Amino acid sequence: MSAELYAAFLAACVVLVLVPGPTVTLTLANSLKHGTRAGLLSVLGTQLGLAVMLVIVGVGLTSLVETAGHWFDWLRLAGAAYLVWLGWKMIRGAGQGLEQGGAAPPRGGFVLQGALVALSNPKTLLFFGAFFPQFVDPARDFGLQIFIMGVTAMAVAVVSDSLYALAAGRARQAFTARRVAFLERVSGGFLIGGGLWLAFSRSR
Image (tube, rainbow, N blue to C red; front, side, top):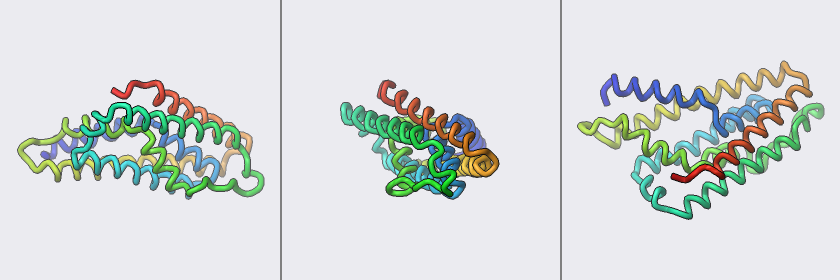
């Protein structure tokens, strides 16, 4: 991969992360409700989920997912249901634990929750499967290029998501409990919206 091609890929990654999705919404919500550390642990989980998808792309299994048919749809619907459930739980629990010094963490921890949200949208896998080849130089080693692009995509995402976590953690300290609860409800609404979009979007 030439320097010019890599620069174009890096710029595309930056543009993509500027559009927040369910993983960013989860990071914001956990940072607001539980603090910066919880948000950063959520980022770690989402990066693990992203790493799994990038490995699948790297070994060329994207075509297998594309031909999975109804199994792909079931996975998509399961992920959508999980996002809606998380959003509803976030709305119902908005503000709880703020006055008592902290709410209880989710079952399985923030890392597992982040990984599940990242993996809940299998369309990300198909997106990377279609996105990466646009920047591959056929005259150079394919595997090495996929590895470089994968590491770059994860690095850009972890920087962006960590900044969201730090900003939300600071906002939690500066905002009143009432405002934090309002932001939690908004975040829950975005998660529900993301789940509904995932449920009703076409798999292809």
